[in-house]
Length: 433
Image 1 (cartoon, rainbow, N blue to C red):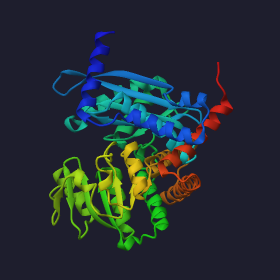
Image 2: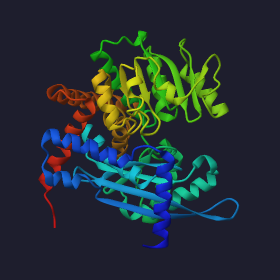
Image 3: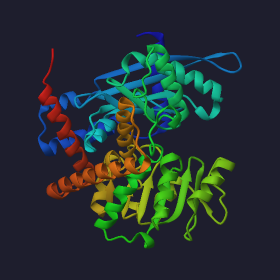
């Protein structure tokens, strides 16, 4: 074993120990196996679906502003491409691990299948803390990362997009670098781009917009009146803050929101725009006027109608699931609930809108952006949202149909539906060579 590999494995072990939470890829595999048992999935198909098709690990040397060179580690996992080119975001975070990226690429595979778009699943990640880097350092990191993975991406191979702590500006650096490397004017290799570089109207709001469509349908199932409903949102980044704004606009009362530094709570309700402005000015939602501080752990256990986990994975576990009081959990984040917690929530009768359904609006509109870029013909936001709603309603109803038929939880139902779509494509293709 090389010295570099030993160092890398040591880093991964340290990160997993620091995280002190269940391995994300093990969770993804357990969710897959649970659905496979119920559907009696072909063992040969299951064996192929347990691991990604390809994983690339790259070293990213970056000249920092002080003249030193720092080497970052990056990943790109392409999980399954039976239904089309790989699709998935890239996250920048100090606690990114290989197994996390593999898990996210698996979830992207199921997500694309659920909403019925012609993609497989992928995910990327770079171990870094973007909050401690200047804009120039981020640009150098981003351009070198996309250079390192450029051989495996392209509009018909793998299409990266934004994720945690990556932005439309970073996507702009990605597409510019890719185009210069290839000598092409490709605008469908990267999605989530700025509108000036032929991004799509509605892409920034897409994850939250899609989530609100599913919340609306779930509320109808439970006869919840928006004007009388209370909402709690953990994570006030792009998805969380926009979801708060959209739900507030529909009459829901936002009683608590949080970010990595803690939360703000008041039973009287919070104006989403005002607290977002407070966060922009101060760096956190904590300390917003007429609210009291609440820890993220306590925020999850508040009495409410709708809980939106919009941060990172593994926040709802067997340790706190019994204390969850929400009637609906709409998962804006990827993998926020562990399998043990799922069982508890199901027994409690909580309506869980699983991540691979609830937050699939982002990849759906990324698909629209890809199509628009290929044709060079772009739609207005009204058309984007109309088509998004059509996809989300169909996907929600398919998952609900399976859940009611099999008398199972919604996550397992979502997996069953998604896996069946991927398995059909795999069988139709066969194995070659």
